[in-house]
Amino acid sequence: MRRNCEAFAEIALHYRVLVDVATRDLATTVLGERIAMPIAVAPTAFHRLAHRDGELASVRGAGDAGTLFILSTLSNTAVEDVVAAASGPVWFQLYVYRDRGATEALVRRVEAAGCRALVLTVDAPLLGRRERDVRNRFALPAGLGIENLHAAGYARLPGTTADSGLAAYVADLLDPSLTWDAIAWLRSITKLPLLVKGIVRADDAVRAIEHGAAGVVVSNHGGRQLDASPATIEVLGRIADALGGRGEILLDGGVRRGTDVVKALALGARAVLVGRPVLWGLAAGGRAGVAGVLELLRRELDLAFALCGCPDVASVTRELVEP
Image 1 (cartoon, helix red, strand yellow):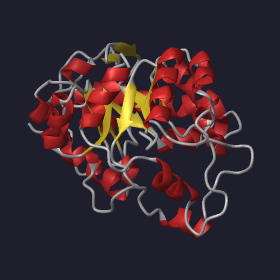
Image 2 (cartoon, rainbow, N blue to C red):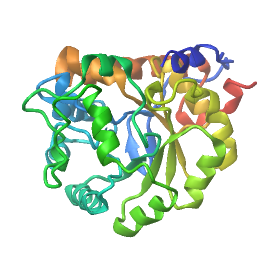
Image 3 (tube, rainbow, N blue to C red):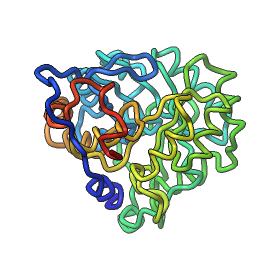
């Protein structure tokens, strides 16, 4: 996590001057969906641990900010309720279970609910050893579950374990044998566009597109899976060059400032996703807290556009970071 943040700080912005920036337009599109700014909400688990309204507050805050919300498989709120509460687009982050029947039923359910894309997470065949979770024997409190997996019987984490309950859940239920063939299988059961999340290598990004993905999310799972994984902003440029415009690229990991967003756009991302900051806003103020965090980032991004000589997203080019 620290490396994700520090890598942004090491990149300078070689700003342009004497450009007309009297008005700025931050709007962009992701998979054809228009959003008010190139900042969207990353999928994160268990929002009701942060606030009683959970994912409902988060999706409403995202809507207040005019942007996209990605719902986690491990959400504490049913997908139908989240989509009903949304005023903007909702995508669904997917883990593939060993039980392919349960996975297929989940995919069909989220499509029927109105989600507009799938985001397949591929960097968690097992859960990284999150030592605080092990020490605390992490488990969900009574009354909270994985709401979209009740029908399959997979809604509860193990209640008593010598390890993290989430690690035990992942080891028991998620499919560690997943290969690139999973993309074709998912495309055969849904019409939703598919992005592959967890990419840090250019060759893997190319494979994802060649196997039928609509795009990739350059991500190292917030730094919580493999120690010594590269910072996402470090690898973004290589991935963008390798794809050469084939498929859309999103990035998460370490985005904390509006200038971070500019750097990601300059290196080839269509937009960035923020996870932890949204949860901080949710914990502090529910819906208003989420909207407030996104508004802080929007204002910083607007100022950064002005100071970089960029009136719109299209003007944020590689020359800002590699003059």
